Structures are given as structure tokens and as C-alpha cells.
Amino acid sequence: MLFSSRSRLFIVLIAGFLFSFTANASVVKKSNSGLCHPPESGWYERTKAYQAYKSVEACLEGGGELPKGLALA
Image (cartoon, rainbow, N blue to C red; front, side, top):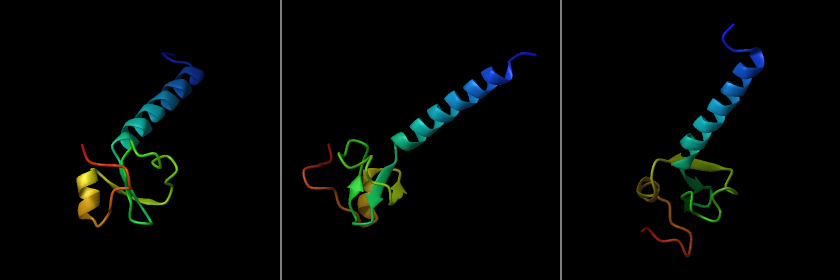
């Protein structure tokens, strides 16, 4: 047996964590109030109900706005 069941479980958990981190890292969240929250937004982690966009530009084109105090670089 190459890996024990405990080792396989550990590998699956690590792979799942890494995949979810990279998948969520680039998501821009447009909240129900129409604000576009990129990962650097102070409200990013608190925004639970949202429509996902691949970029801030796509979110803005989708009718969203940036939160006050946040500007495009």
C-alpha cells in the first residue's frame, strides 16, 4: 500500500484547501447592495450573499460600484 488511509485523507484535505484558496482569491464579489468587493476590500470576507465576477472591471460593467474609499489602481 503506497499511502495509508490517514495519509490519503490528509492529502485530500490539503488539496481541497489549496484549490479553494486559489479559486476564491481572484473572485470579485458584487453584494446585494451593488458594491463590488475585490479581495483587498475591508468588507470582502464579510460579504456572504454576492454575485461573483472575474475582475473589478467586469463587476463595474455589470452595474456595480466600488465602495467609498476604494479606487482602482
